[in-house]
Length: 266
Ligand code: 48H
Image 1 (spheres, protein in one colour):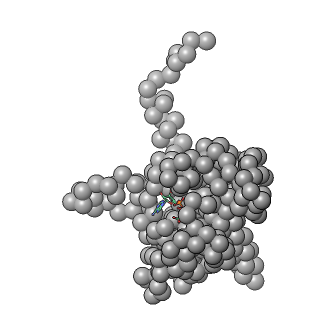
Image 2 (tube, protein in one colour):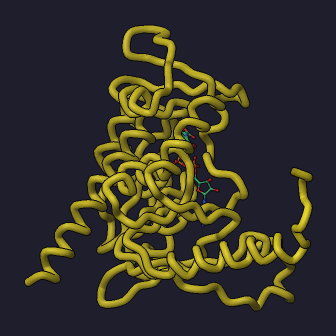
């Protein structure tokens, strides 16, 4: 068979436009929106979507993975501590134990397999998309407002382009250091975002998992965003806390969805 024979340029355009529009329509209303595709957001997505819950990850970058592509100092090695290695082992990611309970692997392999596992879980990724704000109605966060990321980079005088809204039952802020969803909620609902503290691996890892929770009705934080919200220390280039925080955010989201479903049945 001759490659490219019988395919017109507009066939290619139609496949892209129809395919993307169909997906976007499908996700105007979803169960869970996860803002940010770093290690915490991706882990949360995997554990939620694999239960059959409709899950949308929104990422402003063209690529997913956030800070997981590099270890420290631009060296692409991923370090995790026990018991978080179990999350990676379950995805078929082999790690070398460098000392008891401390593991290292190539960042490329870790991210590639994590992304494959998220794709297999059924979660959807909307990339190059910036989450600008939250929907707030009936005393709950009810979704997000999104725009193309390139629009945010354009000069202000040509950017009066309103975002569009995507409704969801739960939003997870996995935006890393910025905690941008929590910051928006804090302004509107009147609570304080502390900003993370100095480096202390043990305390940071413990606290980031402990504080992963629903911080406003319908809004959960995970990963570095949680450290920023609660003012707990940073952990530097170790990722066990991010994975376990993502998993806990997933458990929290599933509990919220369950209690909402029970309330609706009544
Ligand atoms: C769409 C957005 C928006 C937005 C941000 O930074 P991340 O990797 O976040 P985590 O929490 O999964 O992992 C943190 C880790 O990478 C790290 O920085 C650590 C452990 N630091 C320790 C230390 O001491 O410094 O990913 C966040 C993602 C990124 O891909 C952003 O592009 C994306 O969120 N993002 N996407 N709309 N408004 N804001």
